[in-house]
Image 1 (tube, rainbow, N blue to C red):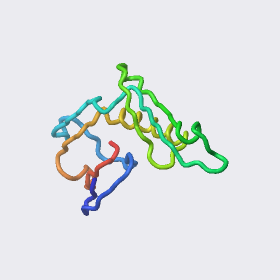
Image 2: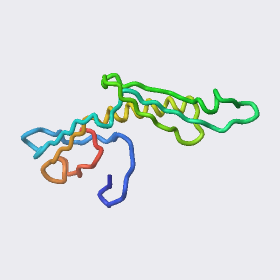
Image 3: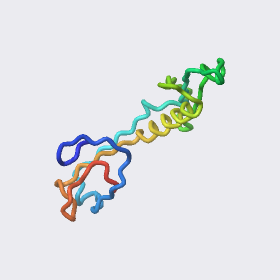
Image 4: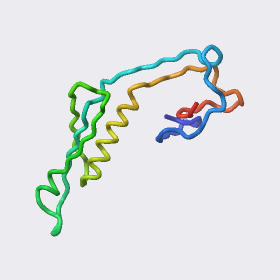
Length: 132
């Protein structure tokens, strides 16, 4: 998203809290919710490989790095295969599979509100990524 000066911002879930509550019939003009599971899968299988050295070598440690995470809400078998980038480890493959499952589940429900005006009740601007 961008800030009030037009600068591109890249961030995580916001920590800033809005000072004004969103109340249907008062300051909410429209509300749009999209629910979709098209990007969700029953299982996220991540595979990777890494370069070996004099101590750590062999097929089991270099080419057979795999991890999986399951999404229990998707009951039909629908796997997603992901190739881990870079020098993979078992831990990085596990973290990636868990991240994909959690991130895609979180994106299932997206809600957009259109409010009256640019400012909150205290005069401050509404900002993207604020918690309400």
